[in-house]
Length: 226
Ligand code: SAH
Ligand code: DHB
Ligand code: MG
Image 1: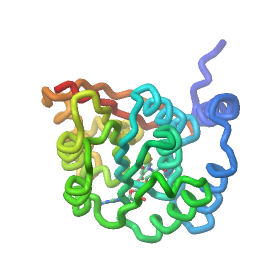
Image 2: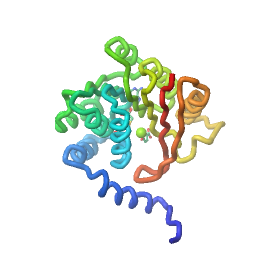
Image 3: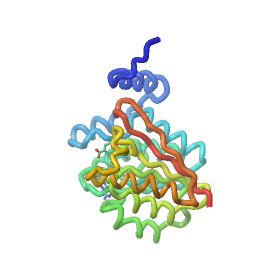
Image 4: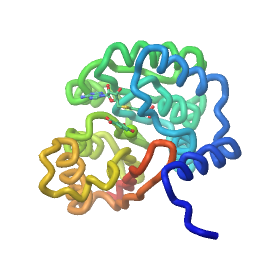
């Protein structure tokens, strides 16, 4: 068969596997509807990506989860469901309008009991998260302002333990991660973050490119080894 790897095909393949393996229930569909109605940007993880995060959490048996970048809570729902009834998600969101929509979506999903949404700049709330936490986080998902990825990685190391997993979204950005001379602060943040991964002896890491409904991007994944 000829290679049909154009954007239109990526979307259709995402829809194909999404329908088979990550069908969206009322809560997830309702989240996308509510997000659109409130004018939130459609930059949530795709259904198959949400299921990927969900499975990683379950594979790790993670119960204590930290998310940086809530938006309308689509990924939060995927993470909180994976954490199970005894699990907990702390999610950080700068934009109060996003947080408000997320709270309503999490409420409709019946997950408010296991999710705490902290409103404000993540960099301001992370010290509070550290003070309040009773044990290190098992799983950390970083998906906010990309320019701050280096700082978020430092915090993730502080708030985790050997065996914890750190996943970062949007590390490819259509290939722009290669632009060493880019004057875009987000690209520079992703590049500095990638160099930190490479030079951090406490982490074993890789990065994977993805195509799909969200275009061409990717995730990094790190295991805290010591
Ligand atoms: N994880 C979500 C998508 C997050 S989009 C999902 O997949 O469903 C990125 C979010 O990060 C946006 O809602 C944006 O408002 C938020 N954000 C941007 N800068 C931030 C900051 N400094 N601190 C916390 N959140 C921030
Ligand atoms: C953007 C942010 C995201 O988290 C994402 O998944 C896609 C795009 C953005 O800021 O453009
Ligand atoms: Mg993202």
